[in-house]
Amino acid sequence: MKVVRKKNLGSKRSRIPWFFIVSAISLQCSCSASKQTGSTLDAFKIEQSKSKTITRAADLGSGDHTSFSRPTGVAAESGRLAVADTDHNRVLIWKAIPTISTHENTKTPPPELILGQTQTDQLGPTATSLNGPSDVKFNNEQILVSDSLNNRVLIWNHLPSTDGQAPDLVIGQKDLNSSTPGSTAKSLLSPSGIAVDPDGDLFIADQLNNRVLYYQGIPTSDYAAATFVIGQNSFGATEASIGPNGLNNPRGVAAANGRLAVADTDNQRVLIYHFPPTTNGSAAIRVLGQPDFFSKGYDCSATGLNSPWSVAFKGNSLYVADTNNHRVLVWNDVSSIQDNQPADRVFGQSDLSSCGQTSIGRIFGLSVDSQNYLWLSDSDNNLVYPTH
Image (cartoon, rainbow, N blue to C red):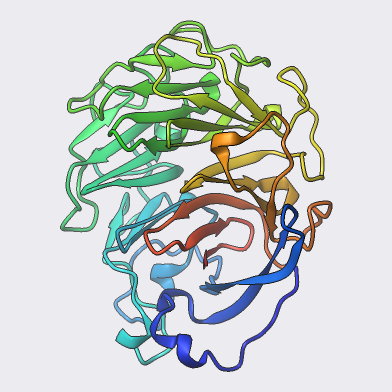
């Protein structure tokens, strides 16, 4: 990845999210389908320390409030931003992404809200704690958080008004003071990725149960049962498997345009399904990262993957965090995609056959906002990048 230091941002100062202005770089995109190389995307990042401070600082310059420790999930929608700050056991929320035009200094603005922590490192399970949150999503005014090590997904029906505010309901547990793992239609075991489709249906990657749960409509009460299960033939089954009906440690989900994408992490592939499912154990219709549905080797190539972790749609395009290959792969049109189709573009590497560690680390989270910025969480370097 070619890194270009910019001395002067010039006319872009009023358009770019100020939030990551501390250091500016250009991430090179190699576009295999069009053979256009050397095009760049602007990216901005916060230089994070690895401090374990978990309280929000009053002073904008202290940096404590934006000191990430292994950020994973990121959500950027309707001008808002949320980051799952996993090892700090909290979620940080900015109600609006500041721009340079609203701030003349070079200090990072604090988040407006912190969920999961107040003044001490609370792990839970309680109504106000989080333990290893791995993903966060906005759905209109709702906020959904995958509270992985508490084996639950929490839902706030409206944007919280105070730090540490308790959620309105819980999925995976009978109440907000429980963290019992399970594999029933109502239970979870280390949930990871969350997706809400355009119709308001919910998908949860139930990672250690080797399945994805589908809820027809976002639940409105605690301990709701899933409608169908993907990756297993029935609720209660948890075996990792291969093939078009199997999953092995799935971590990421995304749903749009009549397609569901699942990052089937330990099978080194991404599966594409029709949605909504109509029965348990639905078969995938396409596989990326493998030559067929029964292969699971990892590879560094235009068709290979190595521990894909997160997926996101942007229009008809599919973005995949190819985490252990230190890159993001893009397929331009998922509606016509074929099995084992080569990626069209790559970010983080100079070409589609390079996978070594560069100045970016492993990408664990993806999100596309309404302004077409692609947000990436770089867990190794404790950074979050918006790119355009």
